[in-house]
Image (cartoon, rainbow, N blue to C red; front, top):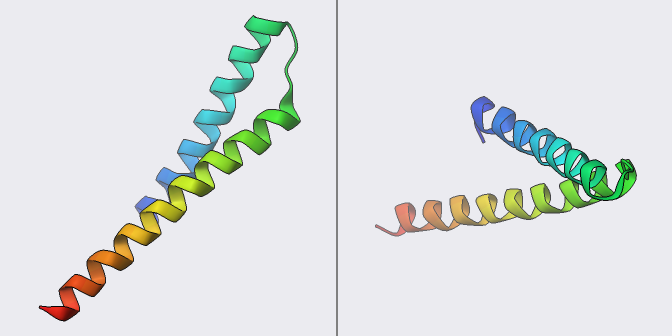
Amino acid sequence: MTTFGKYLYITFFVTLFLFTTVLDYFKNGNLALLENIFYSFWVASLLFMLLLFRSRKDEKKKHIV
């Protein structure tokens, strides 16, 4: 993964965390920080794993050809 990809991943995590925190605050009147950290980490990790799987699959195709 390139440096740009790492920064993009971190930016996605922080943006998702802030978005869910602000949304919870306006919906429920509380911040629910711990719940939002777990949710953001779970979604960002799933996305990261999917990106890794896709890049490995592309590498295998390049070696076969």
